Length: 538
Image (cartoon, rainbow, N blue to C red; front, side, top):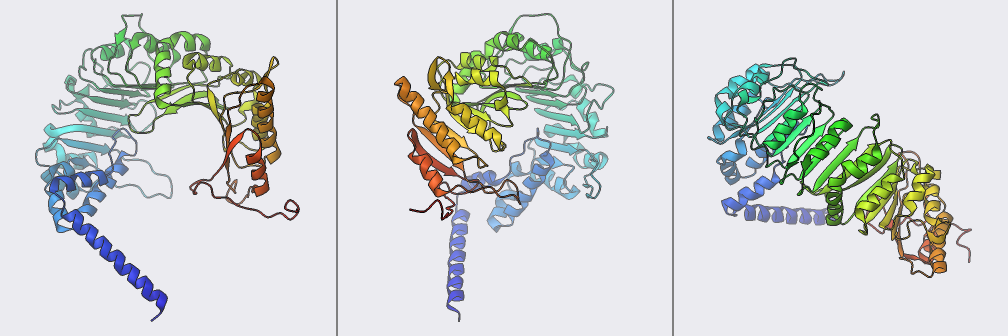
């Protein structure tokens, strides 16, 4: 027998033994603990995403696989009704019948995905028609608690928008096509909407009635036609929903009514206004107060012409303290400069985490940095990211250079050639004509992408900053230099690899506290060492 194969066989036996013992240990867990573990293994179904049908099928596949692990798992899973509360026309008929039986009398989640046109060469997805789907589930309608309808064409499923559903708490309805698909507005749930907690509507006309919501927690409206909702109706919804926690508006405008008393939404946590008419954004910012807001996203299209200084300093004034608080609680935020404009953002990417984003497309003005500086005051932790040739705007750079709450600079990987050199030169040049302090004097970390930059450029930047502080008699904040060691621009175009001697020179330069080598999906600290006979001569 080959020694190597015997060793491999022994290892395999050991692994089988370990897996067997682990499965026995899990099988012996109390039922409540086992159920908790099984729930954590299931994919989360978020009905607001356009890929919800993929998540739904993945959910059912996972359930079926887990129930086949052991006999006990099968008994536990099949005997737990809460695992079987999802119905969808993307499932085969027998799956929906089984789910109805096993879910007992629990509230149900209903997902309808309309037929889609597929590209040439792709196989069409076979979903149950609305008529066939309803034949199986119509008897359960009084148990529906969540309904997500995605229409490509009007079907009989859309009739359920106008039918009272007493247990319904969440409605997600959208048109799969661009634009408004329904000529006649739908009366939402026959007007019995007082139990709704979550409403998300995209591209579908609704007959909005005054006072139709009283317990709404989340409201998302996207791509509605200009005449489908008036400002008075929206204001009425907000006023009637004091517990609202999420307000998300995207891509529409409306008739703006005269000013009215300000509405205080004490529980609003998340405000997002994306690609809406500037008049609508200004009106909402003036009409509501959100003292508990922890996530603000404002994104303006560049096609709109408006008074940006007044918008930043006056319209957004009620949110200045909120933005500063979010930055402080995150511990950092970032300003990105690229060819599209200047964006200030920062997010905690855990679910429902804190975050901020203010972006005005095509806006390149020193005022933006002055505005951010005014909001943050002395709060440190701001990062500047250069990408896509942003350093070409000299007026912007002069204003940026003065910011003392910037502690990190990143040159984005999308930069090529001269852009990296320009950013390094900016970091090394004097702050102004009246002082020798360098631009962004409080920077403690600089991140440089792989590229065709010369090590001397980095040395010049570091030494310029060091000597500038020396001349001013000011203690320099020691810097960390991070260098990405990527070796390919694309699949076939290699990058130049840094010589070890070049990296040693950077590390030994005065003012450098640490040199850190980083790579995508690679252990930190790994380094490609290249031998060069000329450089390495004694």
